[in-house]
Image (cartoon, rainbow, N blue to C red):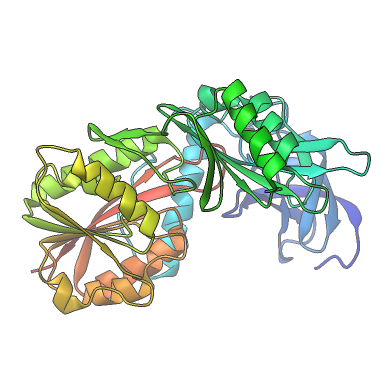
Length: 422
């Protein structure tokens, strides 16, 4: 039964969807399509306001034993976290189950380990929004759930303290850069030398630039930029990867949590060291989070389309010592993947693509003779698709290890170790 207009019903929550919403079923309608009700858990009875296949929690009639008290006062209004109400063990099992489900949908039966948990206050980057209201006041915070509303944020327990403690400073920058015609996006990254801020869709006139530079100095912000245009850099933002200093360009992709990056790096290095490769291809390498670790013991071809990322990697390499040779190369691996013939020059390949996965590159890998392949992804569905391609090409999946990088969200980071069968 599908609701055509908004109504209020009592529902039993029978499971969870892959996005973290509870699956609600009304009494007497066991064959009806489920209603997706956020912030509910299996085993609960609730009253929900229903429109089409979506429900909004109105009242919790019977709570699950797995329900806990959220740690953030903005939970359920801010769109960032969906699972703060779920106890740790069932929460981790839910995340594992989303991976198993994705693999099963592609005909795969592979060992999926329990996710490695990390601290909740681990997110080193955030995207905040700002908008001028009709009265001239500034709305500043995170986007609301399933809306364009901006939720004013007073605290955020998932951010690293270096960011969480600087919300007022970021608001001060947003107040200067936000115009009256369109919203502003403020990308903030906590680096080892300070906060790096990228402003998107803000005012860029000379007066605004001068005020932003003054504000950055006053508030001790390391760098403030518009896309492709650094306004002020009081100190170069930097990170340490495998003991090597890396200075990322503004807006470059980083793993959301430094702790997660370290765990993924350690798992990848452990698998590669066991395989004893002399040459490794690091595909979608970014600024070198894996490249610099692998280069401790093997030659690396580091391939990515992002020129700024490759420049950051090249700069780090020029000041690094004790590494095996690294050859950065710019290439669009979506349109022009490394061919199986090119891949055969390597003993091992690691690839860490965006959420869309690496369909064409996986097809070339499947036809190659590369012995060890490590796949890293934040999307279980596209990872499962790419792994199915590798399996069809003769690879076996040795292990799949999730890392709970996106704490309190339904998302999960995954590393899969594959080996070519004899």
